[in-house]
Image 1 (cartoon, rainbow, N blue to C red):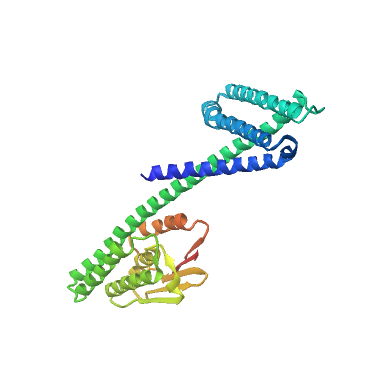
Image 2: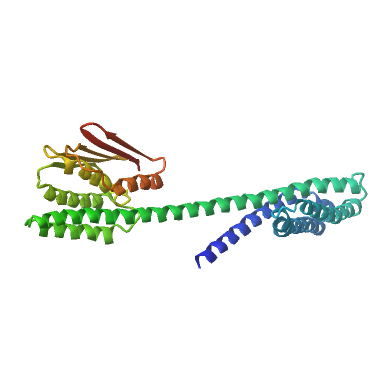
Length: 345
């Protein structure tokens, strides 16, 4: 059904452009032959216009709908140019004999009313109009092809983004369940609160973040809940801060854009630091969205493990959603890890 609607739209657009083109050609010809109204009379004037424009439309239609698709686009160049030449000859004979009759007899004998003069005039003008119709056709083909490619790219982009988002959610859930598991092993009284907060996060993930963009305010609320869960897991020993400035009410971003950076900071920074662990998150909204996440490096050496899905997915999403409109800087120092993300809104 959608394909049929698109095809009908393309056909209607082509008809509109062709109609506009032939109206323009008719107006030019009317202006060029206005002198015939007085010299040959109004009937001959209209007959002259109708004959010329009708023949041109017939010639252009045969070229666009028959010769180009069946010969030119199939690589049968010799046949195409031969048939175009024959059509031009047929057109020129009809039009030139009519012009010879009109200028030679209706308007009276004229020293310019020779058949050769009429042939030359009609050949140059007809070739020009024919080339213009071909240029118009190929211009519309190029535009429609470009638009189709853009639609395919957008669909591919959306499919890839949806796939990446589907990876982010299980990745977060895996980490959150690990946190809950650690608390249940300790038989901590905070486990029920963690379950409640986790339920709130899952509600956002399942029902409130199904759009391509969400209000930044909702994303920050989601992030606050996540930080509260992490504070419980860390035993409130780490210095975890979230600072938000600027007009966040008017800012919309793709969902789960900040979370992978924060998860990465916890996984490779706060969780591996015994003393004075800190994580500082600063979000500022102005003409651009600035996100800065800083944490100290872990002093606990752990074996390499699989992971990093969230950060890799974030980089890919940024490339897809904000091509040429974002800067992601990662500073991996000896004691400090910092990520600065700037997005041109």
